Length: 156
Image: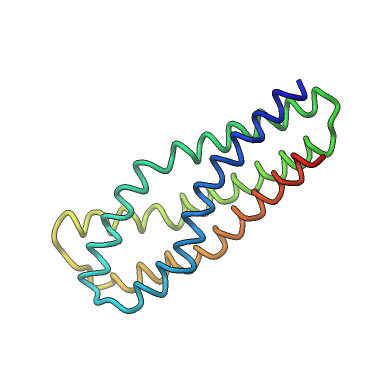
């Protein structure tokens, strides 16, 4: 059980790391870069970024959540309470992240994708991006804390 729990933890770290790196990049680089472009460019770029992100990033996102739940259960079955607790904490952070993504980010993504597909610039393009940017630092922080929980998990 112990080795299986650690394997699940490694899969979780690799999966969560993809999402964490993406969100951290968006918070640190993409947000200020987009502030310097015009609304039509913002719409086209972000519509296409979200098109590919929303298609491809669910795989590591879902893998990270499944691996987190699996590691939590396997660590508990192996009697590793600290490892189980840190895996559970990481899973709670990932679920919270997912709720923020689904309620705030995903609808904005869909709006920008539709605008890019229609070769239109919404009058509220900047406002949409501002609302998306409003939660990206929180999302990146939650992912960072999940990765930190996984590091503690592997050291326990």
